[in-house]
Image (cartoon, rainbow, N blue to C red; front, top):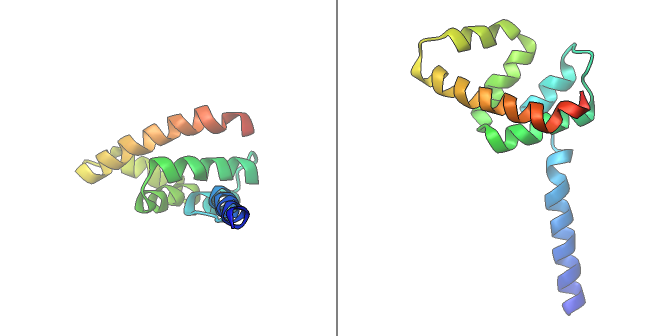
Length: 106
């Protein structure tokens, strides 16, 4: 009985640890579809993992749009909207973490 419980717990832990790598989020998907030469599954996956920790799902969808339309990032950054200012601060912090965590992959 103890062996079965331990095996079940170990299997659940493996699934929990590998699920983020298997499931593509909005940032990873946009990254892989981009025309950037440095893109790779490992780099885009790393960026998505940081996004999962640093940004809400809604913020991830906004940021994913920057891959398709980089000018949109400039518009958000220069916006006078309070919500865009809050987002841009979090997005900038996200970028700093990505550079430190994923820079070696690009």
